[in-house]
Length: 222
Image (cartoon, rainbow, N blue to C red; front, side, top):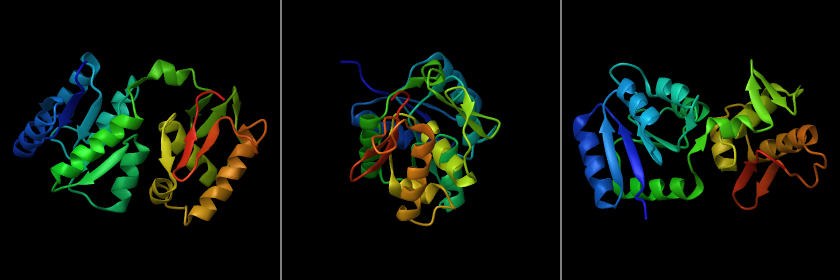
């Protein structure tokens, strides 16, 4: 069986070495680089199953890497950062990160999060995403070749799903990641409104599905 490959982009060489050594002991194949430039080169020329990414890097930021790499491949990503601010976490998720851990890292928790993310994620080529009926263009969402008439909050919610398409997103994560959402109940109400705009039968949704006890999942096809 082919072993899972992980790329670490972290400029703290000691932290990078410790993470790499631990994950290799867990059975993963791990490579490490220390700049965004090298990270992009590795990601564009090799296939990885998961990315561990710092935000503060010597040449650019982790957000720059996510923005660039997501043009060609969406890779399951865990942000590893010293920042604990909510607005930084929200920004990371909006740029396409799937999980966020604050330094100093608990390695046992790291392994658990890696396995959890791998269990629900896989590398998705952008050309696959382009076959989706959902596209974000100029702060609007295109669906079946028509722009949807969405409120600002509906746009934020649906954009989050599009950036995490085919993945189950918890209600807690949505409320935490979208500042205007104040409660699960408000989220659920907006989900109902979004379904009315994208589903043939909003009472039996094919695109925006409920994952009972967890949250929601947006499908590329109904």
